[in-house]
Figure 1: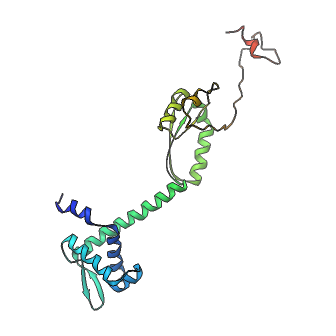
Figure 2: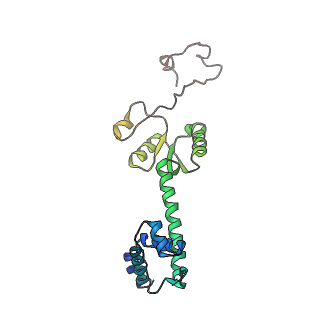
Length: 207
């Protein structure tokens, strides 16, 4: 790496490259100053500063305006790339804040993975295709601690009925998505198979 690079990185300002790129686009310092709402002397000063930084003339001045030197073309090419990246960054940051881009890590149990989560991801992708969704399958006692420390952004799982997950952290908020009914499955020869209604107490005598 050139010894000039650290010094240039400390001195160079992005606004200077914007001014320089506008001068080339406008074809003259005068027109660039009008576009940027700056004085001609301010624009000229920026160009001189850049020429000092890069160690050579960047512009050829003529009767018809200005054109880049070889060094100026090199700087202009890189400046355009940097400004394109800045526009992309600005767009991505805006999309991130709007919720249409970014990443989300979701912890799920197997039952949630069967229907609810895939349906939610399809709807999310339809509205925000730039969002990257990562799924982590685990048990409830693994997922909630990961959520508490920030390894997961959200969890789709059964909440323990004893409320122990609430005691673990006051930073978690639960929202009921649906309630899951339970069924008893037994062989046709089971003593309770013919019963129309079964209470929990009725099951105590059976393993």
